[in-house]
Image 1: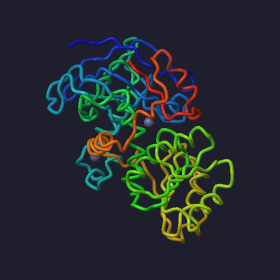
Image 2: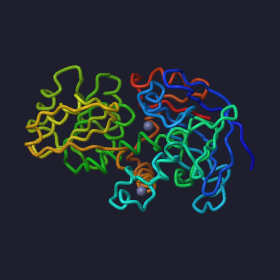
Image 3: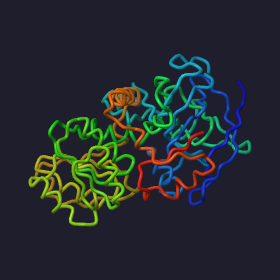
Length: 369
Ligand SMILES: [Zn+2]
Ligand SMILES: [Zn+2]
C-alpha cells in the first residue's frame, strides 16, 4: 500500500466555486478501506455546502456523499470486506449499540465515533486526505467526488458485483432517503393516497417506494413540468402544478385529504400547508431539510384533527438493512435506478451539475470516473 494521488472536487471555502484538485489519499488505517470510486452522484446537499447553508466541520472539504466503487485495499482488522469487493459508500455510520441505535433510530446515532466520521475524521482524529500536505475533510466522512477515498469499513456496504455502479452510487443518499421516508417514516400502506411535494432525486424515490408499498393514488406536486413527467415515469398517478391552487387540486382527487403528504423541498411554509393537505388522522412527513434556524408556523387546528407531523432525518435509514431491500426491489424490477440518472459526466465537467442543481429536468447528475 502507498499514498495514492487522486483528482477530487475540493471546496476551499463556502461561497467559492469548488475546484478539481489533486489530493493525496492515505492508506487505510485499522478498520478502514480505500475505495476506487466508479461513480458519484451530485446531491443538493453538496450544493448547500458550496452555498454555505450546510454546516461544515472543517475545511477544505472533498465534496460528494453518494458513491459506489471497488475496494482497492483494506486496513488491519477489516473483516467484512476484501480487495475487489463492490461497495456503496453510505453516509450514516450507526454504531449499533448507543441508546438511539437501540431505539431503532440509527439515523440519530449519537456515538462520538459517528460524529467523528461525519466530520471526516478517522478514529485517530486525523483525516485520510491531504490537499497540498494539509488535512482535507471528506464530506460526511465519505468524499465521493474523488477518484479514491478512504472510509471506515462500516461506511462501505458491499453489493453484488453484477450491479451497475453508475446507478447504485445513487443509493448512498437520494434513493435510500426517499425509500426510507416512504417505508420507514411514512409507512405507506396498500391503498393509501400519497402526495409528494417536490419531485427531484429524493421525491422520485418517495414516489417509487410508495408505488412498491401499494399506494393506490400517488399525487406528484412540482413547479417544473419536466419533473412532473419524471414523477409519472416513477409511478405518480396524478400530477399537480405547484404554481396553481394545490389544496383545491388535492381535494378534487381525494375530498377527505391524503393519507400521507411528503414535503420533499425543506421549506417550512410549504411544510405547514402540506400538513393541511392530509386527512383527519393522516400524516405529513417533512423529508426536505429546512435551513438551520428556520421556524415553522402551523395551523394549530390541523393537529387537533389528529394529524401527525413527522420529521425524517435521512429516511431513518439503516444502510445495511435498507440497501439490501433496495437491491431486492431493483432485481425484481420494482425500483428503477437507471432512469434517475439524467446525465453522466466527467469530474472535470462537474460544475455543470452544480449550476443546474434543483432546476434540471432530471433527477440526478452522476460523475463517472
Ligand atoms: Zn445527499
Ligand atoms: Zn449508535
